[in-house]
Image (cartoon, rainbow, N blue to C red):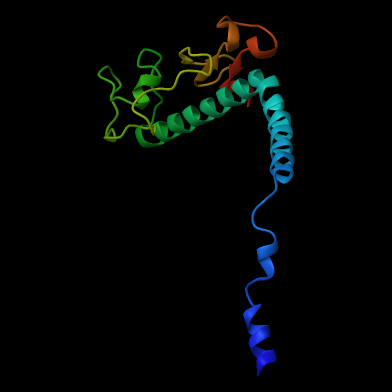
Length: 157
């Protein structure tokens, strides 16, 4: 009986030898986290231009989708005079949509700006015989350009 009591009294005491982490283990973990953050952060910081170009392409696709829904429901796209604003507010000028939805055609109540903080250009008709075209002039805000200053157009896709 004495032997059984001795065994049961040791239950739960196995982990008592080591409670928590040592300072060295914590420092090693922090160094690993810092190295990983540096690698990931460095890659992100080196490619902000690519991220903005991708964001502009995604926004243009979203605007195209909204215009396609607008056209499907109304039989026409917003005029150049109505602009992209027709996707968030019912146009007052002709042609006026038949049943304009209360929430508009975009998730927000404002037309987004391009990633460089400028309004998208909306052309009706678009270049190259397109019914419409949505354009961002890139980082420089001017037609033409290369790299992140190049035009991004709905006609490119």
